[in-house]
Length: 271
Image (cartoon, rainbow, N blue to C red; front, side):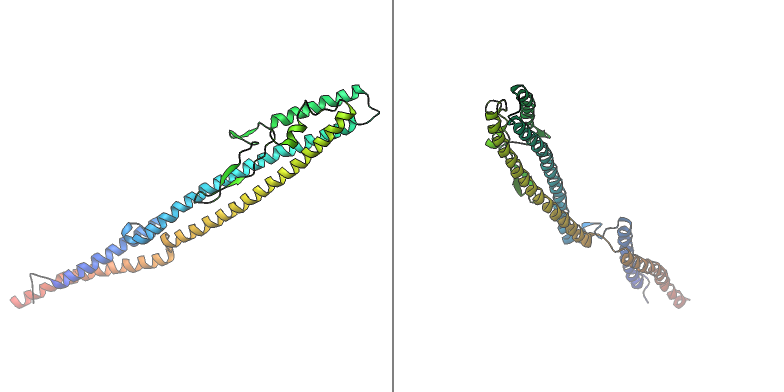
């Protein structure tokens, strides 16, 4: 029987320390809701989840960019819708001016409204969205994924496109006479056709952006699910483990007290 070295107490102490460490880890997991409280818990899982979280952040930014692109095209379409109405009214005025029963004074009245609508369309060509021109020859690059890939939205050039430019030119287009009204009618009809084409192009861009937004949303959902499987704890399972470790610590503490009492048996041999 050995007194100086209590092997049983040492073994019990090691087991108790291990149980206490597991209990502390389980407690930290339950309090944080995370499997990985310290890098040593799952080094590889930490690296994978960190990359995925970075990708999720980029997906969020891409979603914001797509939403901004949608707002840009919707603003464009709002202006194009008013232009369509203005051109329709210009066509009505041109038709009224073609009426042989109208006097030149009547046509001057029509011309006054016609000129105002031309000015309205000219002013619309310079409109901006958040400092970015809505109508020019440069396409808008819209980010559509977390890797920074873009696609170019179709540009609409009101000032430079011939169908628009001729219709809003006060020099070449007017309805002050039946002859000029006939020319104006043709140019306005061409402009209306151009508006229809451009609005259809905007619709196609919006459809592309809408699908891109749906794809990004699904990607974010799947990435979040993957990260959750790596980093989030199952509370029910962990609570069961916590209860087990708690019992092991309590029993280990009790057994350590018994192991420390074992050398006292040597006193009986010395009596």
